[in-house]
Image (cartoon, rainbow, N blue to C red; front, top):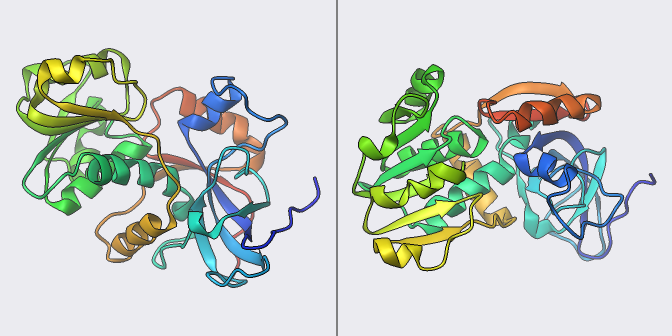
Length: 290
C-alpha cells in the first residue's frame, strides 16, 4: 500500500510497536458488522511523528508518541495517520514496546474506574480478569488511587497480582467470589457471562458495575439498587498524558509478557483468543531508533 499522507490538522506516526487487544481478533472474526474492507488491524501504536499536516502545531516531527487509533486506521502497519487529539507523548521512562501496551487497556481501565464509576480513595473495587491487559492496569490504577483492591484470577497469578497492588486475590476456578466479598463500591467486569451475572449481588446499595464486554439488562440495576454501564473506550490524548505522567512517577507499569514480530500477528491473536494471556502482547513493527 502507498504510505498514507496526513491531511490538514493530522499527523503521521511511523510505528515502532503495536499492542494486541481482544477487540483485534473479534474484528478479524467478524463480530464487528459494517466494517469497511479491506482494513488494517490494530488499535494501539507507539512510534515517532514523521509527518505533520498543514496547520497542526501540537506535535513535531521526531516526537515519541503513543495512541489509541480508530478501527481501520491500522496499528499493524509501518505508518498510520491520526487526529492529534488521540495522541500523547509516550512515557519517558519506558520504551516503545511497553508504551504500545498501554493505550486501549489503559484508557479502558481509567475510564471504567474513574470517569464512569468515580472510584475514590478508601473505596473497594472487585476487578474480574485482573491478570489480563485491562485488569493489570486497573489493579494498579485502583491501588494508586488508594482503593482496596480485590482481583479474580487463577491461583497461578495470585502472587503476581499481589505484587502489583491487589489486596486480595480470589481463585475463580475454585472459589465463588460472591461467597467471599460483599458490600463493594465498584465491580469492573472484563469477563462477561456468568461472572457478570453473579456480580450484581456483591455491590452495596448505590454501587457501580462497569463491564467492558456485557450489555446492561434493562431493569436489573434498579432491582439491586445499583448503577451500571457498559464501557465504550474513547481515544483521549489528554488521559493518555495523565497515564504517562503516573508511569514516569513509577506509580504503575505496563505488564508486557510476549513480544512478537509483526509477521507473527496470527500467533499473537491465537494467544489473545485463548483468554489466558497475562498482561499484554505486543507486536514489534520496527527496531527502536537509537
